[in-house]
Length: 561
Image 1 (tube, rainbow, N blue to C red):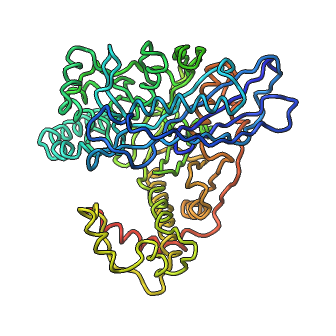
Image 2: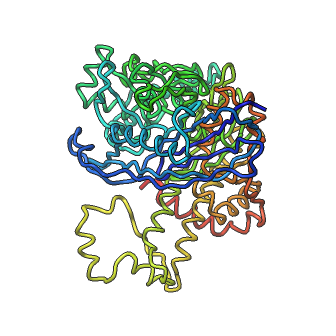
Image 3: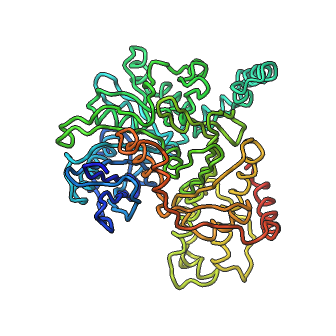
């Protein structure tokens, strides 16, 4: 027993902000449960600092974990999670030009601070009771700012942003890149060193932070000039929040966030000088890299009234991995949200990139460095959300009724088509039958998720030479029993679904609790896991073969579109 009450609370700064409380008191049979809805006012002035910005688009995400301490009440660190305290806060993306996706840093900051205050107030606590703060954030979204003034040179550029498309195409078709591939292929053949394998088939994409950062220095003179004078800072969301929370006194990131940028070399554990030289990126702009579970310093007392220790920074997928307690080599975490992420704990062994799979640092705690192999699936939740949005009529039971949710009469379709410049790459190939209902459409969408899970799982089994142990799923789509059961059938493996599907916030709290000393080791965290459902194979995978073959045939036709 400890002579204090420790309440761990994890908060997800997303479309909804979830605060997860752990029952701290040995004499309490149930946990305090709170629910509040929190939405910030929409102010046009917040978007006036950068030109050509307009509101709209999808909500972005950042996660927080809190460690609350209430004096003079005994507690037990082995008690389990309970209900959620939700403080919803929308952080809207900006789309000033086609393909551009941004976040206003000042809006993000003000909402970040506001939602923390709201959550603490809702919980019936005060800031002086917060023992520690852990922050888990979306990966790949970044910004640059002036080191001396702290003024941003541009908005946050989202991982979804495609402004670097022209630059990416130029590089991928360049003779220089072809020469680089040949050189590293020879080096890998001669040395057998896996660190040379990834560059041997190096291909740039618009999702990579490196290409968007290269775009920044080619198109924003202020950032380029500041970098020449060693006055430019680069940071993902975690680094920016840490910088603002400490009033500029702490500039850092952690190994999980750094490795997720693609600019950080996981083999040498440093920012890649080779890539920076290749893309003319100044090495001086990058933050120092610290342990994931680490005392980063304290928030400035003017922000919350008291200084609060910042005890962890972690990228969202790695945080979910930690929250799922996937601590052993071979443990697998499947997150299904907007996209799908398969992460395999490879322990101390770092597997080189192999096209569809790439290595990451999961976390670093003291001398322990845990590596992951990750594979991704795009647009899982997006497709389901699209179907939900067009299928708004509860009375629609057949295909004609489903179409009525798209338009009310054929006459208005001409006006709809003329209202936009193009179909954004969407192609319609007739294949519907008179008997096709909206249920068939929805099933096809869900089946595609399970089929893609199967393909990526098979790739992992083939290329990652580690026996796979437990498979644990989280994310919003993991609440869909059809997708979960079908995936279990196709891969012929059990899949565990936790009681709480928002594992990133829980992982941040776990890491902060370890750094603060509330928990002494990961064995204590395992005791806190609560499994809601275990999906076990019920049908032979061959029963799905005709449907999957049809799906594979359709996808092959669209591969080079």
